[in-house]
Length: 421
Image (cartoon, rainbow, N blue to C red; front, side, top):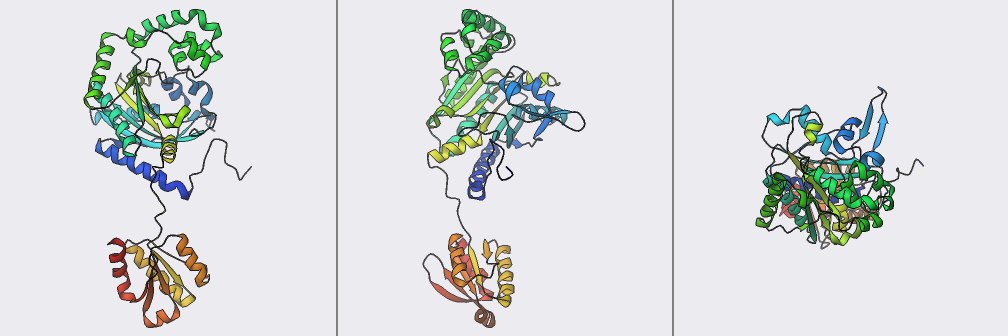
């Protein structure tokens, strides 16, 4: 069907694009406050980047990537997430040479072959933060604070910050062994995905949404019990910093996130009124990813916020402002002579910072007034042949329907004073 978009995609129409611009404006405001700079990466990358970066045992790599071979026989993939791409850009462009800590943010579309549902699309948009270069838990606390404050500034208050530590390559094998031992006699009852995860990455079983797997893994040992001294100290300091900043959190030992690159801190922010799709933000530390991608081992942490999910939450709570602000001025005109005068006047109004529109279709006075009302114009300027002859216009205030005749040479200053106060 040429008139239907691909399943799992959605057009952002003029009627809602103001909502997106509003969200993006709030993103830029908060990132400016925290001194994060924008980075823009291509929407497709070499497939190998995601295989190595995300991990070949993840659902994203196994089931959800949009991968294709180009005419040069190169395997390319539409980005399913952006952390790996930012890491690639960080290394390729030697961003590590500029500052000890690279503070980056991005806004853009991601692509996953997933089952479409409310707030979840195959092309979706994320706002993400990446802080690369330092292992200090204060950096973890900073980006969590940024995420929480961003959501709060939008008016979302029923937030639930879930926190965990997933350890590091030093302590994770100990936990892996304990978890496999716990699940050993339950493997045959797990879903097919979790059966394969048992040997390859048993921690992912804790993340399974299958009710049976969730029940079978209840009472499993917790990673926090197996943390090495470094990971334990790091996690305790993070909790201390969040408490000092009055950011409440809940410890969630089942929170492992869906990507293999996470180390130490893992977190998720849920907005409870969304129900099953309550997660609006997820992130964590990925101290081994840059080394995996060919660079020197470099500590890093980041998060991503789903913009569609945030919009859904704002709509649910009626928190989106009215973006139908309309035009400042609509010009009514009749005939060839008046069209030239009206067009020139419209151009001057715009040059002076006023939103001005006019009719281009030669419709009747009544039809043009309807259009002015539809555009929520604050004022209407009427340019008829009599007005042109006398070098005046008729100005109508649409709020109170009062009309007055104004000299053309004075109309711009008058409207600037009226509209801009």
